[in-house]
Image 1 (tube, chains in turn cyan, brown):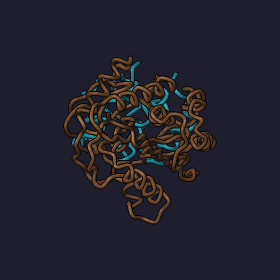
Image 2: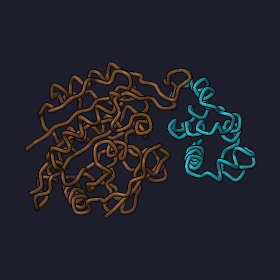
Image 3: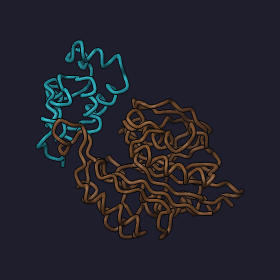
Image 4: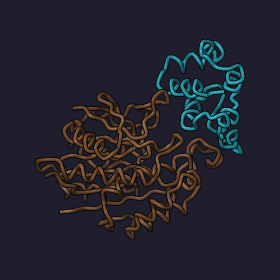
Length: 89
Length: 274
């Protein structure tokens, strides 16, 4: 599995206000057209930071979602969930 | 011929401009002001900035190991750093000459002719210039997408950069400015609980600071292994920006080295000639 699309989505969320607003309004609908694997989609929608990191999502990009609490991930929740994550191979 | 008149190393934390005014009493503001005094005294005509992009100018669809910007102008920041926007000149002649010299010496730069720059370039210039009023040449080093370039390769790039400056016809006065942290984790497992940041290896940062003060540059290059830089945090590779700059310095001690920033793992150093 490549997490390229997760990284790409996180980057676009940082630069694209319209996409951010759409994710805030309806996360599943907003990312429906993104070519994510079912597992990636589920991890993102549930804010499973640890798994996304372990799959290779770049922390500098993944961390952007906390700037607007996207996918329910506040900075505090992010810090809690990233703790103990293993570095990707 | 052109000449290298100053080399400088400073951090580029994106929250600094909003937190620490240029004329503020805080130690960060004071550290930048002290460096600016040296850069002003060096009377540089152009500044080569060695920095790492944070997925703002480049992305994983095409992420360069070493890149150089060759254009007449640029602007930024192109990220969301809370700081003034700057439109500034790029020194196209110097950039082209560094590109040509680098290619001849075996450094196969990626080239961009249209680009913005992020906080890594502009936070230092915000503090160290009067409104980015000198032409800039940006050189980007991949400091945080594995695999990173080897420290020895970055050091050799610095030597090639010095040779390029020394061989540019005319009397241009050039400063080289490296930006980055020695130990920093952003949004990774080693952040301080409840925070976006962590400084995983403050002792490494102190060690590098001592080495720089003693002009032990070859030792730094030997010690900056991928494992050690990763141990210092997922942004620990920003040391490579400094190592490129140190390649231009030779074995000389800085004329100014601020006390180590024990809180953020940062150093502020300046070298001057003439």
